[in-house]
Length: 439
Image 1 (cartoon, rainbow, N blue to C red):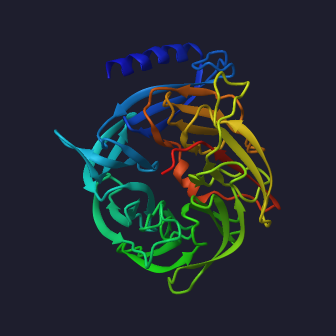
Image 2: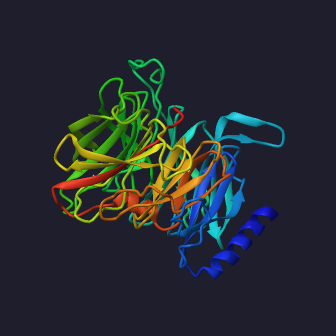
Image 3: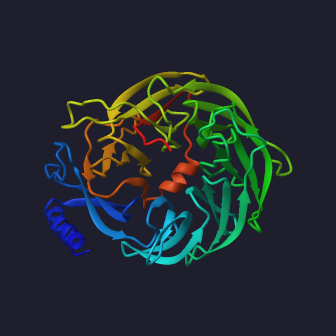
């Protein structure tokens, strides 16, 4: 802790002499804990905290917290109430590491410090979460577990305390066609639909998109008929997009086992009966990478109709702009009503084995977390006119552990959920291709 404080104070002195303009906090989960970072834009771009000539930002470590678990896996931020929730893989006591269970830990964010509120052992392998807020302000945290289940927790926004509500187990009628991955149910993500009525859960093991209605008063979930996907696809991550005129809802799904991107038109069924998804295109991702790992809606670009990000794997490529080889960020351009992509361009990801990426609220910066030997977070500029990510990072920081998740304390989660854009024929989408440890 002393060394962390010294680093921050020394950097703060340098930043002060360089006319710092603004600062934003980021929270990073890794296998060493939760690290609080501060990204500052400098008035004097000549100052550099990284071996890149265009570094115009500083990235400082403010604090590291180890109250979550031995292996933090996922972070969920509630910017409005300044709450942070951490999902952990396994938990440790004074003598042992228990790998058969997970943990849920809540924090209040106070004065740039994470203050632990509640810590609970939960079912094993929590991998993703979503935060639902009713019109009355009642909050539900839904957690997807790779171990065939979904758990839900009622949140008190004012205190960040929580209590368990449901533990729903998913089963298969029979194993799927891919023996390695489809012998049991494997929920990979949980999201809230644009109407704020349903939870949507891609299940890699079942080749299903599971739909569950949320009772806004009791927060109890009612399963609805699931959506079938192609056998052997292995759906992993999906996001919604709502058109600017609110007349069209699309769902974009990345399938891990088939390395495909599927697109659906969503139609809601009456009487809280769920939704229908009609496919309007599927594209193979094998031409540019393997092991698709994530899809995220990005802040909209001017003159764009659809906006989304995809993270998949790709071979390492040497870049003249960097001193070492890097995996790849790919920016796709899509036609809104066409099943194929128009074009894509490549940019470096900063290093190898990126696990996670996250755009800021404005959409002009992207943070990428690497799991290579440098274990770092890299910040890139992104054009809000074209969606293209610049080749040279503007800031980076190393030694964070194997990064699993990055969240911005600037309203990112709300933007990712509700991002829309003006209705024109062509849409841009940035796809981050990263070599990823399969899992």
